[in-house]
Amino acid sequence: MPEEDLVDIKFRLYDGSDIGPFRYSSAATVDVLKQRIVSDWPKGKTVIPKAANELKLISSGKILENNKTVGQCKVPLGDIGGGVLIMHVVVQPSLAKTKAEKKIDDSPKKVICSCSIL
Image (cartoon, rainbow, N blue to C red; front, side, top):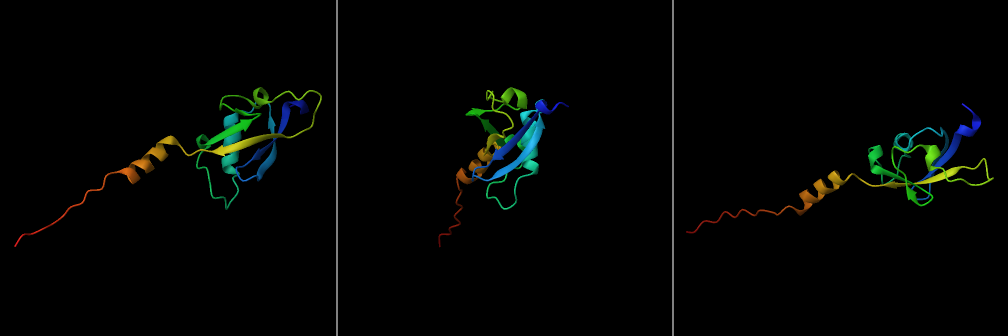
């Protein structure tokens, strides 16, 4: 694999800490990057993704689609070479899980009163 087909990427988390940098092929997909982030997520964080679909990657102000490759996501930087591409990571719990939690919390409470008249 030629050296120019490799891209160094660092992932910036919500608290300003980083994962990486790691070297990826330009043909690697965003989904592969997300899976790597989940597997290398630092211990002790308050927010922890359980699956790759809970992550959003942002590069140059754009949310990256899972089927795009690293090469398609790279912004041409002119003659600047050898740099590390920084992608921001947003953890967003799955919508189904969030709705299920709300349904449990918002469910009407039934009060059963057992009264006897003497």
